[in-house]
Length: 269
Ligand SMILES: O=C(O)CCC(=O)C(=O)O
Ligand SMILES: [Fe+2]
Image 1 (cartoon, rainbow, N blue to C red):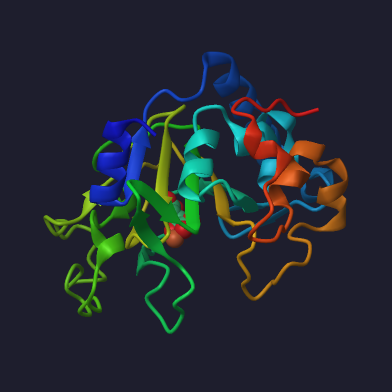
Image 2: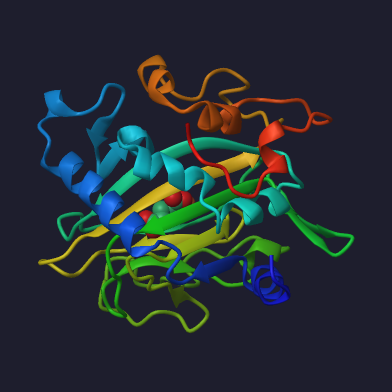
């Protein structure tokens, strides 16, 4: 990470990177997503299901999307934040429309009884074991809705008082609390957060445009949650992943170093 990125990520808990995708990457990914959106349920690639507002395992629908798990701009950052021990563990594609009328309340990792999610700075280096990378394929403008974050909250030390930020939870017109930021990425931009950051989602207001983005989640390679170390993706999905993506998604012990992390530019084979 550049000194500026490091400073801002540590200060705020997220980074908004502009114009990460090249015009060709953007065209190919947008076309792949449009094909998914137009597909009938039996035309979806095996292991991908439409549900709620998107497609589970949508990252595996096309190589242009799968390649984003190791994108040359985000990959070095993921390696740095995990101390070179990354594991990709989920990749859903979201198509967020005005039809969904309720907001996603503010939430974050580490708020409950679990102490397994971390954000630390050691020896001038940031460590976090729960990273979310959002690749955007459509534009978000101020007032549209979408992702909101509470900058700095990844370093909170106290429980968030109930209703502090949304005293009128049912009023979508209520002004945002001044501590909350609505992130407005454009197509081709990337937002990286530590899941320790308090965030939520405002109702999507435009009726003529939707919000399309990929959610790529990364943990440390030795992180154990409910799903433990077993396979993260259905066999039909695993089958079509490139060896590099499989390596990225593989469990490994804390002392091991994946071959993959020695490279900054990984091409899917
Ligand atoms: O819809 C969004 O922008 C954020 C979704 C979310 O909260 C998450 O993926 O952790
Ligand atoms: Fe979230």
